[in-house]
Image (cartoon, rainbow, N blue to C red; front, side, top):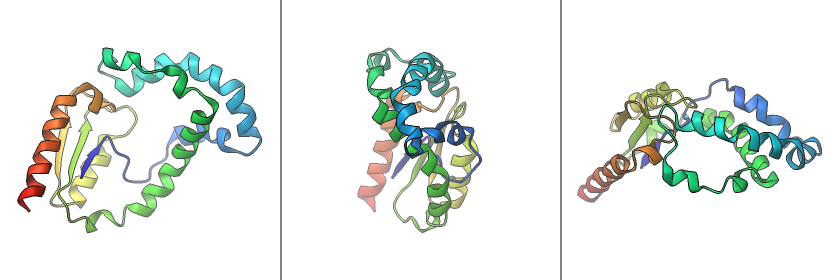
Length: 163
């Protein structure tokens, strides 16, 4: 199992509060079809800098169709997923120690969305896991250090075959 830039333990999150109105019946529909797409388009460059930072946005990602991310249905789905992060982490945290397969945890040390302590704590809980920290990398480490992530995957695959 390869876990990259994950959210594993419940914490207070401002993004849950700010995105929650989009999932409220009727209000969310109105917001998702009016203000939210416009606001999302305006904030898109800031969001990219936050999720990739401190690394620059890779050229390969600049081709990502922004319009797909700011569709009303996607805005609502993202808000719903964000709202479920805390309760899902709360429920799942008791199961981590039961994992028996090889587990590789990967995190960017400069992640601006998920604190690296989340990965460190998970690594402490899953004694047989490995933790790979990427200095200078942010949340989208899989986009900015793709070759290194592939090496982690190859290592875990080798461990799994040997087991």
